[in-house]
Length: 230
Image: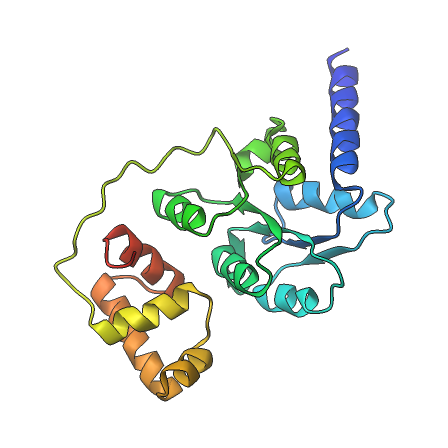
């Protein structure tokens, strides 16, 4: 009897999801291949004339985004095969301001939540909620449909007060880091600031050293947490 009830619930959830996305084009960028990805992939089998694009990397997502003729919903995981989903969402917000988006958090943290909120992500979803079939995915998609915001109850508010780092960044370094937060590449930053790509690279290496992090996304996150960026 329990198994039958579970099957019925799964079918009801599938119908609800199908109804919510029936008239929407979707760009889905998820990585790695975990349970949540498989759940999302079920959408591809639902009959629709709308576009369903599935990719794993920021590069592929941006490439497909340029070919889509309508404004899609963009569903992204925190981790991608070539970097951070937050960077992709920053790119998409800059390139296509009117789109609606959902961020699936693989490893929720106060820093990640802060950045996601600053990016005005429309729906924030904890991967564990999808795994447990809590109904959060349906609530998140409903919010996208209604034009409202949704934050998974699993995600705790970031109550950590910002603090000032004793290791400050120069004006130029903060300028570069702000452009990194906007999703610009080293080459784009170099062109905008009229400096060489090698100079940008060297500045970023120094930034990461001062902030004691080892990648660009963590540098932005750390700078925000330390109150070095608005």
